[in-house]
Length: 258
Image (tube, rainbow, N blue to C red; front, side, top):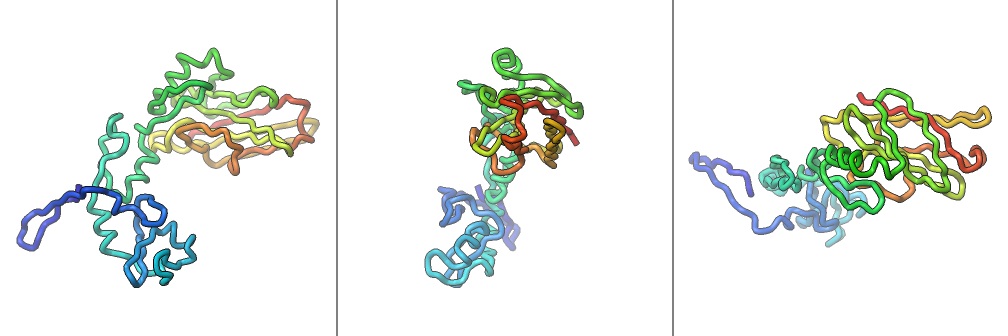
């Protein structure tokens, strides 16, 4: 729905869009966000697509990325839509261009249970309760409180995930090990959206063997709605095979809440 506006005579006008596709970038098909750019012929491009096009219009090759389309930006700010989590309890209505930003931090975002062969979904606090009630005895897991150190041991040949249950904030974390040809990637993920009420979470990983110590301090725990099985490209501790003691991986973990 387009937000009501007032005319010079004081009358209030409103309108309705039959489809929201017109507010998507014609190149990447993602929702347009401010700033929106146009070429001299009026063809639109979002701020993400302009650099990928080398600032040349995808339709006519005219320069694009320097001239803003203020008319479309005004339209974008006037169109309000409900959050996609409205059916789960979210009451927020955001402008179309800011909808995706809100949904990344929405407390009602649906998370997927990370336990193998489980298809339960729900908000992050329900995921914690579900895991504790159903999976904590069948999956490798342990409880902890943020701020304290936790000693863990994993077998890199058989253990891919260790679940960590934070009892104060009732958050579920996953410690993942990815055994690659040159070494082991170790990462911690939190199964939750980046909701403001959760604050900022950081973590430290410590690994020692034969006098060698590896330390990784992450300024922020990566928040995910669904756990990935792909080897991380950032935010991880790398342990070379030369520093491993067989297949055993003993570490100290500290997760901090700010």
